Amino acid sequence: MSDIDRLVERVERLLLRYEELQRTNELLEQQLASVTAERDSLRSRLSAARARIDALIDRLPETVTLTAPSSETADGSGGTSRKGGGA
Image 1: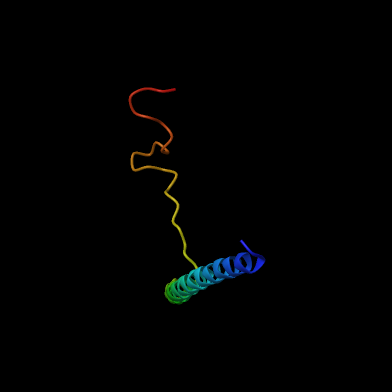
Image 2: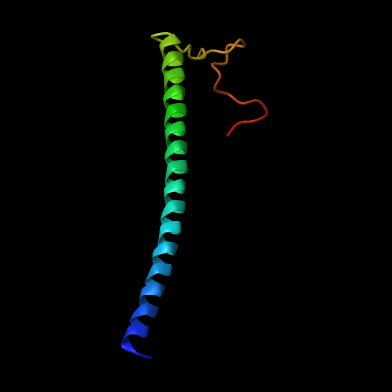
């Protein structure tokens, strides 16, 4: 093969590789656009969920008083003994 033939062959391989890389790049750009749209959608949904949670929190009473169970039971035992035997 002459130098020119080898050069022509190499240029043709480079052109094929270039076209292949262009197709790959186009696919990657499509995937990026899809993932970006999905991310934006998820961010929007997250923001809406946060707003709903904030609205629910705002509806909660300021102070919640928890009533502790009385230390005495109805039978006056103080709630400390167990039925059926001791420790």
